[in-house]
Amino acid sequence: MWWVSVPLWSLGFGAWAPSAWRLIAGRRWRDAYALVGYLAALAAQVSLLASSGHGHNVFHLMWTFLFTSLGVLGKLGKLAAVGASIGIVSAYVGSVHALVIFRPSAGFRGAALDRPLETRDSAVLRAARHCVRRRRAARRLARRHPARAARLGIGRPDLQQSYDDGGLVDINHVPDRVLAEQLGMTQQEIDALHAAREHLGRFTSAAELSVYAKLPAHRVDDLRDFIICL
Image (cartoon, rainbow, N blue to C red; front, side, top):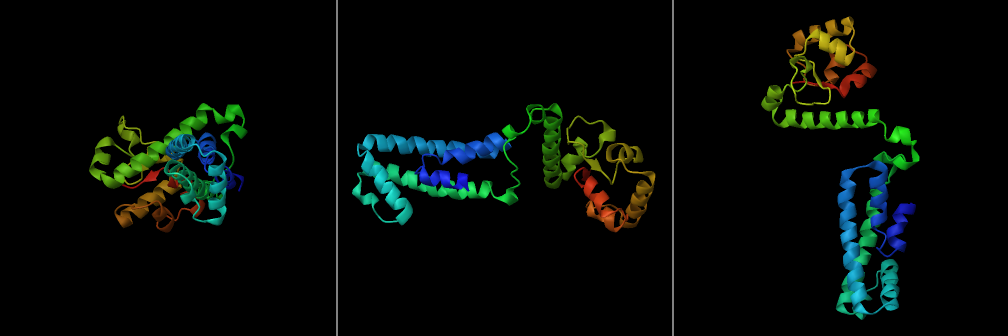
């Protein structure tokens, strides 16, 4: 709630702060776009208010409008009114945006700066994040262009293709050794997969491993992020 309040009591001048902190803490590039937008609005707001010459009256009327929604901007000149309007819009939009990005369901768990330096900057975590991004990109490509995905060898580490799919495994086509090496499947699980695939023809989702191959649900959950069905 602290971050939600910042754009309000700062009259929009601090609307950029929640996005800046979220960018530093979460390292999400989409937060950078919001930050750039808020900074551009701040630059316009400061420029217009500075050139208006109204000084204290501008801030008093902005506070009044912000919390009472009275039509007081008409008392200002055009430049000051536009600058004050930008500040008021930034205050409202910034507060709503902060409420969205810091809500509990967004999965924010505190700043990266609060973590130990060796953990935050470890090569292992960077590599894991890279693999997650590559798997997501490969899934999107496979969904939109399955023929191209097949040519690139997505989900086929046995083909030694150069395309980086983040470690995906196509359970419909890879040999048993890949299932064992990449997914850690036991021979019993592999045999169950083969039996189910002979019955179905091909798998269309990881969930079918639980339904038809009788793999435990927790086991399917462990494998789901790495499985693709082409």
